[in-house]
Image (cartoon, one colour):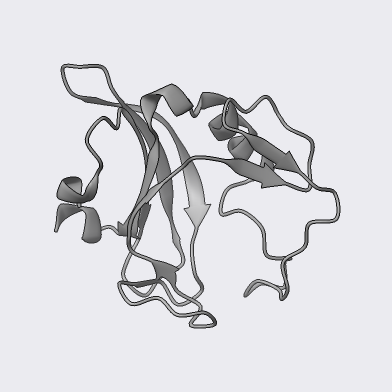
Amino acid sequence: MLADVPTGTRQALVVTGDGADLSTGRATLYRDDGSGWLAGPTWPARNGNRGWSADHHLGDLRSPVGVFTLTAAGGRLPDPGSRLPYDHDGGFTVAGTGFEGEPLAGCLRVDAMRELLRALDPALNPVVVMGDAASPAR
């Protein structure tokens, strides 16, 4: 997926699952310091209940595989100090529940999401690279 990372990207959140059909994994924030990519913090992560899909469709309970730009953030909680434009809306809801009965929200714990939002820097053109453990190597 490295070829899909836009030129000028110097920050990447790499979310890898433990397997193509598993919902557990990890998220690691990387930064390109000009001489190569350096790993930063890593957090436990959850993705779609049925794993990953290169052909994601609404309701398939899978997370999409790919590279996606990160240009804004938002949620029900107040802005935790994000450098990305942040849309706070206490009324924000997502229909449905997760596979363990939890309300649908982020894939990281609240404390980890807070740390991530503070670390993402729009000047570094951040992206998220998502897929099962084998996907980023493809």
